[in-house]
Picture 1 (cartoon, helix red, strand yellow):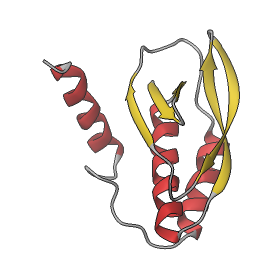
Picture 2: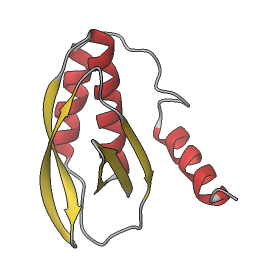
Picture 3: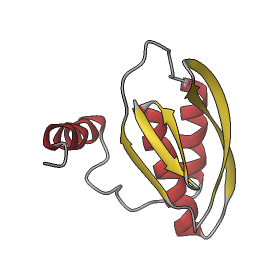
Picture 4: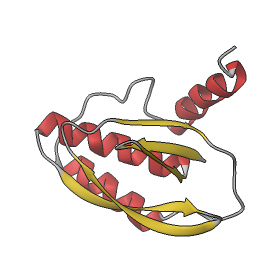
Length: 116
């Protein structure tokens, strides 16, 4: 799970959702465009949905969040974000690597250090 920080607010999302939103936001920024996406979020132990406006000026960051027993995966939404990202054309590599193993390794580094 990740806390996705956006517009001064924080929402809990799956790691895959956080990654897909970041990639799409980067593609939109590279293209100088904006779009609205709807993503599943965790609210008081329940799965809800949130709309986000992404564009060139979006400021996003993710931090680790406690795991939940609630299924936050949404394969259809992830595929839609990936298709939208691909439709914007070739993108620069996402910082730190593109594959799930690299993302998990970066998360483990963050979790292990706990900002000592």
